[in-house]
Length: 353
Image (cartoon, rainbow, N blue to C red):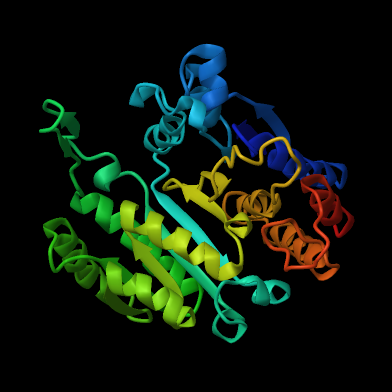
């Protein structure tokens, strides 16, 4: 297994260090793992003048999988848009065709009372949100800011091809088939033609999966239902923008955005694995970050790219043990609980393996 390591900016290097400790344990236990690191995001811009240098992209293309930290920070906000750190992750998705983003939202029993919702609403939640990554407003043309101050116009275009919609919906149906056989397709077909096409294609594909129950929901209602009754959902599939927003909303059901991993897969299950939180520059370097989403992203890599479900389960069980022992970083600690550092949480996971 060749894994490209891209820690990035902010808290990225801190949480990545804890995931690498987990990798070291697996390597010592006989798993043949090769790693190679590369700069990306703001760190790459500082060193090479570009957030996604050619060598970094080549490493991502040559590796079997990418373990990614986070990118961005206020110091880069005034750069031309093509040089901002966030362009690195968008570039990787586009150039490597990582089109399917899987974002599980699972409430660990130990953290049911850490959610912003009542424990009885979120206890036992196990939800998968599938987000399309290569189309929509993020990549659609035309896009621009034009005009003189006082009369400026900003333009972005929601653009989807039938092929893009079909392949992400197939991922949705196939994922639902492996779980509880319920798929909710999210759109805004009442006002957007691109989303009418999305719904039409979902209905056309459904007969290929007679064992999967397909429902449809407008995105604004879906946002409300996620906080009203999240356990009604099994698998949700959405376009790039709606999936981005809904999966971040779902993260708070679990107690913290610091708990949610993700996988971005191509058609052959090669993937980029990353926590869904940002670079959190306000706490970078202070040992306050929660490394569990990064570590759980590694578990997803073992499951989806390398087909090592037993290894994935080993990592996930170790995370559960750390939480059961009372380890809490600041984002998941209740008032009065003792908070641990980033490295202490990572050490607890390693001990549990």
